[in-house]
Structures are given as C-alpha cells and as structure tokens.
Image (cartoon, rainbow, N blue to C red; front, top):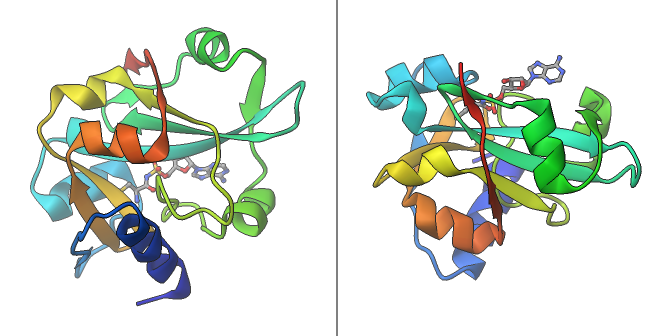
Length: 157
Ligand code: 5CA
C-alpha cells in the first residue's frame, strides 16, 4: 500500500473503523471509472474536491456525489465565503494526495468538510483511498460523522 493509502487506513482505524481497501485492476481516477470498477451507480462515488477560500485562503473539502456537480453559489453559502479551485501542487503538498486519489479522510491535517446531502440517500458509497486505483466502501452517515462534515446541496450534473 502507498504511503497515502496507509495514512487513510490509519485515519479510519483511529475513528474505530476497520475498513478493507479494494485495489482495482483498472483506474478509479474519475467518478465514472470508479463506478465501473466498483459496479455501482456513479451517484454512489464520492468525489473529494478541494477548494480554496477566497477570504481565508484555507483549503476546504467538498464531498460530492459522482452524478452531482458543485453549484458555486450554494457551496459558497454553505462554506461562508467565496471559493476557487485549489492549485494542484498546493493540494499535493498540503493534503498529501494527488488529484484522482484525494480521499475524504487522512489529509496531513483535517480540512473543514462539506458533504453533498445526496450522498446520504445511499446505504453505501465508495471513496478514493489515497491512490488512483484504490477505494473503500462506507456508510455515508459514518463518513459524515468521521469527517465532522456539514451538509450542503450540490446539483445534478
Ligand atoms: N478517485 C475518484 C473517486 S473514487 C476521484 O478522485 N474522483 S474526484 O472527482 O474526486 O477527483 C477528480 C477530480 O479532480 C475532478 O472531478 C476534478 O474536480 C479534479 N481535478 C481533475 N483535474 C484537475 C486539475 N487539473 N486541477 C484541479 N482539479 C482537478
């Protein structure tokens, strides 16, 4: 397992969860690819998107269903400030994850987290485990709990 995946595993263990990671033979880099690999609806894939607060400069983590997209006005309302996409190099340096493998948990330091309420419609969702072909399954309510997330509304793609 990569260092990044080990960090995700350690964070899940610390939250009292014993979750098996699944290493896929094919890429899970995008939500569409992950849905095929996991044999689930694309809506059940968790996209872990990193934004930067325009006022605070702080990174914010938005967990969005694979069949939803962020509506900037709704997201900014939830977060309480303007948002812009974070720089890829900054994401790598500050979270420890590369695009395509950003996990909802196990960042170098925890980020303020917001979860698309649509993810809570499913019994199980799948998220990146720190690499571009490694994923894990989790109850979205537990994901909300362990990331201390606020809910927000995203919109259908
Ligand atoms: N492994 C899958 C889900 S299991 C995954 O990580 N999906 S994702 O949607 O969270 O990650 C890909 C996302 O990274 C894209 O939706 C996009 O928002 C973002 N992304 C891709 N390329 C770039 C880029 N060049 N700069 C900033 N963000 C990017």
